[in-house]
Length: 445
Ligand SMILES: CC(=O)SCCNC(=O)CCNC(=O)[C@H](O)C(C)(C)COP(=O)(O)OP(=O)(O)OC[C@H]1O[C@@H](n2cnc3c(N)ncnc32)[C@H](O)[C@@H]1OP(=O)(O)O
Ligand SMILES: CCCC(=O)O
Image (cartoon, rainbow, N blue to C red; front, side, top):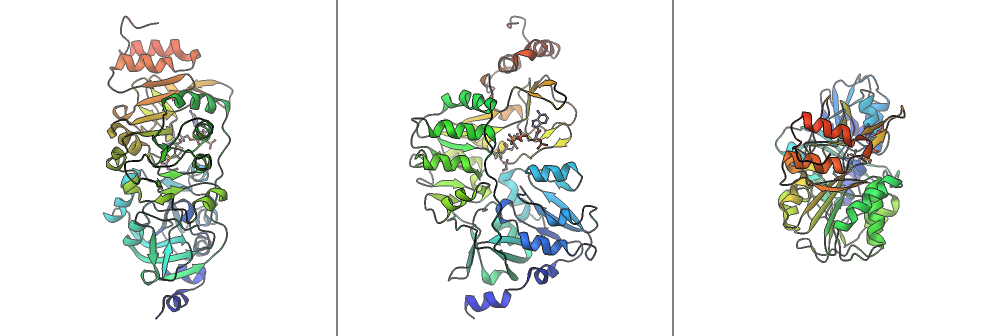
């Protein structure tokens, strides 16, 4: 049988394909752009008919029908490895649950059997002449998901770009149960505009950058502002090694800053594992030999990052305490995002010979009640989750500066952190440091 005949034999409607799902099953939707929109809608129609079906996904870019159509969770429980704004809303409403993870280990949760998969549902690019479907914008742990799955359903979508991968970038028609077709455009997440504080923080980090470094930058206003600064600067021959590629990198490619030629490994290739951006970014990445997808177990592995000797990691955080501990995923018990790759990159940057890692946040925040609150606090309380422990934190950046936490005692950490706190809070933070016995007698007041 030719691959085309096999395709035709396996091609069914989404409603037909989702009949594979049984009571009690774990269904995996993969992550971000490979979310299977038609299959999700078809599965949601089985509300009331199936029981205790658990769905696993991450970084949702469009409404999830098993959540929207079953808010009482009569049939479906939705679980996420990492929250987008939409997932955060679902978690706030008790309609989704976060699964703690380190991105570098994400694939291993499947291979070790901790994250079982009865049915995998994945969006892929159209089949080639060899019967292969490219995973496109998500490499992540797609291989581990399909290897763990009892059944595999592909949702073929012509708008999924073809991305060349190191490995784990495709699946063959012989290995799948069903194929469905759906050409609704894959989800997009255009970059937000940076605010004034984002620009000020970016300005504090920029002087630490130099020609030939390899960059990992997160998403959000500050990374965008930094991307803009780099694009307009004299910096040259930068490299990209990131778990998540977003529009900030498009700016860097378009301005000729990213040549990747100084990278000691994957030379000439900008490496990523998942994607979240605009259609313009996806079109740029399509069939682009300058860009390579790779599994999260490779990209986020501190051993890989170590080999990129001039590696610079820049990510966002929510709060830091005077001990230098960092929370980036909750506000008290409110879940915000996830550990994601933050700890992986902070660890890898410390391993790299000339590595630098920056965790950035505004020094304070004005709440809905109009009251300004410091993001540098005496100590964590009330449910905040420590994303990066103090031993793994290097630079903490605010609009007032960047301070290094490595190799210095508690009193010096406190002193440095207070120097980048919002001026309104510095005196109270000094008093707290004294009470916590992390302020030495001769420290400046
Ligand atoms: C995506 C990447 O960064 S990939 C790289 C590695 N991964 C990580 O670093 C993961 C951890 N980091 C992150 O998830 C992000 O960098 C964050 C959440 C720390 C910051 O991301 P941003 O997009 O700048 O967050 P943003 O300012 O929009 O805040 C997100 C939410 O947290 C809330 N929030 C943020 N800080 C605070 C605070 N100090 N107090 C109360 N709420 C807060 C915001 O109100 C918002 O909630 P909303 O959507 O209900 O309005
Ligand atoms: C949004 C990508 C996941 C992460 O924050 O690491």
